[in-house]
Image (cartoon, rainbow over all chains, first blue to last red; front, side, top):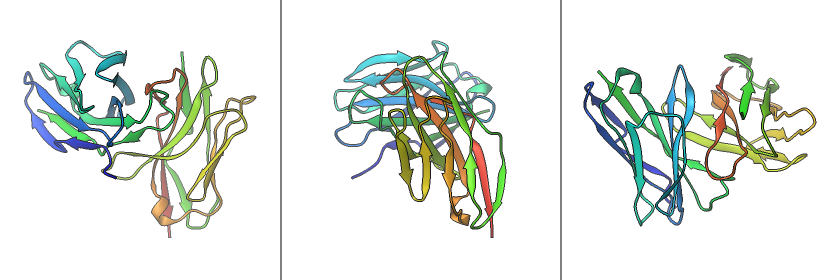
Length: 113
Length: 112
């Protein structure tokens, strides 16, 4: 069974640009969440989707947005990139809404220059 | 609010030594507790979990017991190997869904 797949794995963007990251959850999983990992702030929750509906959102500016499609695949978008957005972005999925067993992908490494 | 506090690293141990990484939490209600491991350049892997008080999670020789009275979930392993070198994150999920609160991580280095 394939795990959580994130694309692209690595990318470099320029300040002011926007970026879209993609996540394919484990087959059959309906919950998808996103986290940002930086050396200074650690792992921080961005948002979570279940059956195409956003259920939770972390404390990030409106430049960070996401969505989930009917096949449970998810995308997150960051507009007007800032240097501080450089991070590892992790996607996670779970089969149900309880959050008791969450599987993470390998992440997308974003560097903003 | 909900938080997780874990011991600062790095922790350096010789192979076959005993490992303890301390973790305490604050939460409203009764959270589920987790330990995740992150190897260099990779995402997070769920190592073990416990969903209620006195539960013991275990996997690959690692163990942790959910202690409600001390709000703790310390990670232990009796004999570490070089391959256990990684960053270990303690985490909780008290609101259901996937909004997990992580500790800052503890880097473990095991030397031969």
